[in-house]
Amino acid sequence: MLFTQIYAAGSRTEHGLISVLSGFPPPPLISIISIPSKSEKLKSINNVFADDGYSSSFYYGGESGFVNMKSYLINSGFTTIVDKASFTANQLNSKWGAHDQYVFERQLLDLKIAHEPFLSVLLTLSSHEPFEVPMETPFDDDHSEPGKFRKAAFYSDHCLGEYFRAAKKESWYDNTLFILVADHGHRLPKERDFNMPESKRIPLLFFGNVLQENIRGATIDKTCNQNDIAATLLSQLNKNYSDFPSSRDILNPGTKNFAYYTNDNVWGWITPEQKFIYTYATQTLSNTGSTSLAAPLNDSIVLDAKAYIQTHYQRYLSF
Image (cartoon, rainbow, N blue to C red; front, side, top):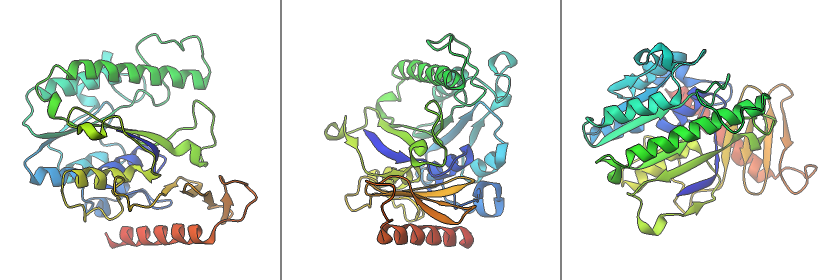
């Protein structure tokens, strides 16, 4: 089941991690994970599954202590955390940590003996600059920055394909839901302006034999955020998601079409009718995607955006 109009709420990995696991998008100019007194109060989907007897694990080839990630993961109830320290020197790149293939292989090995049911999260890193990968790709001759990005993306995609070929042989495969999503968008390979909405659109795929026949192959084009995964997933499992007030059930017909995002320069608002950004430096709103860029902004849509951000910021202050 493919979601085609999903947008990353932030611009960094820690934003994506909190958005996906806690349904909490970053408020403008704030990274809540760097404030332990607040991030420790965030509910995680892992907390919900742990109450139902799920075991849990988190895999990352880099430093789990980066930007206070490990503290957040522990507070979220992850009982197994595998990071850079678990891999050998010949499995690491020059900057961040273990290449994706070794992280995928380690997760598969551990899941052979994991207590079921389980929630297991894997965060890749090979598609991050400096885009070093241990294999030849169709883009080896392109030494431009976009070419290096394509090479790294090709490698990560190859690793994912190998992962699923191996996972299909495991006993747990047929009753497992896989969720594929990006932590944030990117300006590459098309050299997009990272302030603009187009750079924030990311993939979201629900995949696996547990999907009911009537939704297999479905395409969902509602405009939403990665932080809406929490409510969507819990709703489908008939679980209460009231602890995730910043997350919406994408599959609920009553859910409104909009997405929000922020980075160091702007916050943005996306609807099917209009897209605009608020620039911090100039304190101005700018139309970025409607029938005419010179068209006036819709006052109702602007009020919705302001109300959303004010409400979300109050949630942040309440922690």
